[in-house]
Amino acid sequence: MSRILFIDQFAQWGGGQHVAFDVIQELQRRGHTVVAALPEEGLFSTALGDIGVEVFKFPLPKLSSGQKSFSDFIKFLKGMPNAARRLSVIFRSNQCDAIFLNGARCIHPCAFVFLKVPIVFYAHLIYSGQNRRIISGAARSFKQFKVICPSAAVQQALSPLPSHLIPNWIRDEFLQPVVPQPQGSLVVGIAGRVSKNKGHDLLIEAMRPLLEAGLATLKVAGDSDFEDPDFATAIRDSAPGGVEFLGAVKNMPAFYDSINVLTVPSESEAFGLVAVEAMARARPVIANLTGGLVDIVEDGVTGLFAERTVEGLRLAIKSLTSDRCEDMGNQARPSVIEKFSKEANVARVADLFD
Image (cartoon, rainbow, N blue to C red):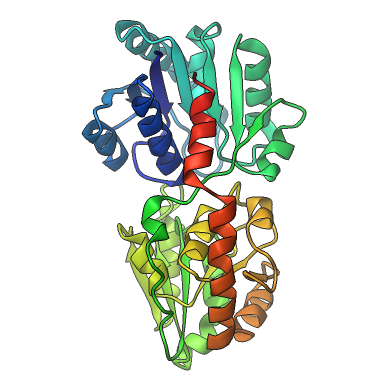
């Protein structure tokens, strides 16, 4: 059995971390040993420890948000050899023979020391520009470099790089019996980091007339964007009554159960995990026609595609009735349960290590 070093650029929970956690548990079930390297401590690193994964810290440099200077890039690059040396020590001292890489930023230090080590890389974003060149270069440089893409959009962005198309999946807690939708005025939800990319500003402006008239409620699940916390502060300060900022939500099934419809007006989505989760709870989704969302939502059947503008979102939301939400939600649940099986897709990822 393999001894696998799992490397992640984050120590907090996110969609990519949930996916990796399920894969690690499957690898353990198959008899593999997994140790982890994370740049800091957090809820994700704690959860890994709880399932018997020994977690080590390594100094992964990062670039600050906003415009970067030449000196910022030099400092970033100078930090990579230190990260590489630490990862090498962790790898050798634990007698590892393979790497599970979760995050493109981790490719930099690995390129210093792991060119001959088998690597499985999870591509969680629609990569472009410099990041795409880094991944393509890694594929040519590493002796064994397998890439997993969760959607056709991610796979297309990395083309012609060979990759495995394996969708993300629905976790068990979202498959509990369905709870009826709330009655009365419309309850709209949005989930994920409060960020410009996710479209919180557009959604609030689209709903402002309904919110101010008391005809709808907007529930916001998610922390501030760690790269642009000022955006989240400005959104909270300017939001009208009727917007509930819930922060990080531990019980996401209960969050979806408390709304009539989820909105995903993201500028880009590599997969769209929150859409799948909401649909598994029999809630329709209003989404931007982009990325992995194209493969998840069936327009007019399990949800709606809306133009990513204030007016486009407003028209879509105003077209909803309680009966329409319920009808689309009832069709959404079997649709995603069939497409995004945890058992099948986790096994496909774990097979790459056997």
